[in-house]
Length: 321
Image (cartoon, rainbow, N blue to C red; front, side, top):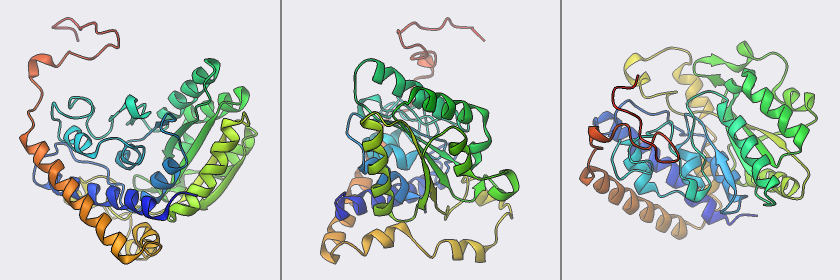
């Protein structure tokens, strides 16, 4: 079982990081906006607490929480969102494509469901190489109808690949309710491929950690993949563009009701008040440092726009379309 205070630290870091990022979007420091992870922090915290440092994750367009929970530097992550040269990916990845291979993060991915295939391939490759790594892929309820996810489930089961499929079911694919888009059940998709699956409380980091730990042990010992459907609720906008567009796919009353069980307060109640206050102060100081770092960091030189396109260092020719 993960330490309660450490789980609280991760949940708190993600919450305050996202709130700081939203503020920087509003101030024009982060271009293009972000997909806030507020309300879903317990899933990233609980799953990543069950992993080793050398285990691997792949993420989604709503991926900041996963990247932070896996151990990437919040300072450089915030710089990445702001498109700065000092970011994790020199400002090239931004919010939806942040990666940090040094901490086992094989990238967020803006293509819905696509990271499941990357995770399955990575899991298979590392197992073929004799490593006992476990790979986790996060995806939303909207991805369960994507063919690439179903193909990944099929191959993971066929190969008995050590993959955890983590479905963050917040009830909406952007603005479409899950019951309006998904026939059958999410667990039924796993069952069709012979993959063990269960639905858990995605608002409680310790519940998530317990379920993920069991799945990780099974995968690492050669037992194959598992799917966890984590029931959660997105407290904020699908994307910060909603602050201007104000789509009406859910009412304020519904949001208030869905936000009653707050992962931050659930985990915080398990931590002594003085410990919690100390963690809060540490995170505030860290994010103050991160913002100063971002504002002092240069934007990438446009002359280097074609750099880093290829893994072998080959540079694309100017003028290529």
